[in-house]
Length: 333
Image 1 (cartoon, rainbow, N blue to C red):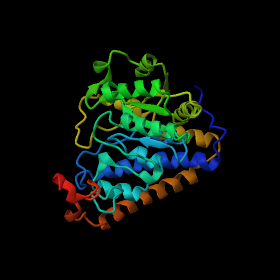
Image 2 (cartoon, rainbow, N blue to C red):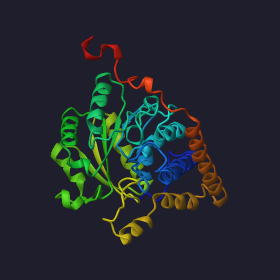
Image 3 (cartoon, one colour):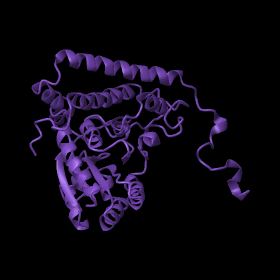
Image 4 (cartoon, rainbow, N blue to C red):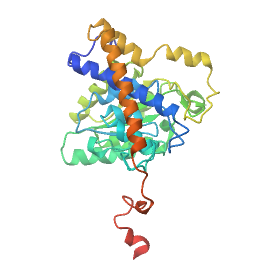
């Protein structure tokens, strides 16, 4: 796919907003990596290097559409217009966090944005997406669901059961496979017999495509095509986004299982730099605007840290809030 030109439906403002979101994800991730020893979420899974997938895919849906996320969900949250102050406070484990400090890094959600949440269970997002898509279809709402997952999750039974049902019932689910080549320290090729995981779509009778996960425009165009198909009742699509995470699986991962050469080769294909150069060629932005955007982004991230540090710690007396319908009913009383 030749995606060098910006989509015709994007205004200059929309095109710049795509860049802003990608940069916000990058700077947010950089900041929490720096503060990894101070925050309350010990296992932070950085999204650095994969920014084009979350932003490109979410640009193809409406505000009313849904997404489900993964334990590497900060990028999805920001791409769905989540508030970075609330996200940072959540990672700091504060009452002012989006989940009141109870979810932490791996369990962020924002129902006001129809971001139905991340979780630490590998491959658990697709079944949730399936249920929401079924409800939307039964209500004739015309909404779609994007469900993000990694190459490790592609071998989980939950995913295959979800794809099978989504295909059988022609549900409006778009499966976004973020293939960053490693399931923790396990190379994908040692755990899966096929190189292109999108081939598995054929077994369920749905469309499977491969896109450059470092190209935000290519991700957008493929997702938009899948979304349009789903809205028309054409069912699901599996989109495999080839990409690479720049950091270890978590901020505690020494990341010695990947060579420096491999990392440097992928960094040469930085998704933010690729897109920025297109904006410059298209005369959408110039160096002055780029500097202003970078400074504003860094300022927003620092403000989110200040917001988090000022936010109160959760009251231990509220530990059962939002867990049970009525805490008094515990034990059948």
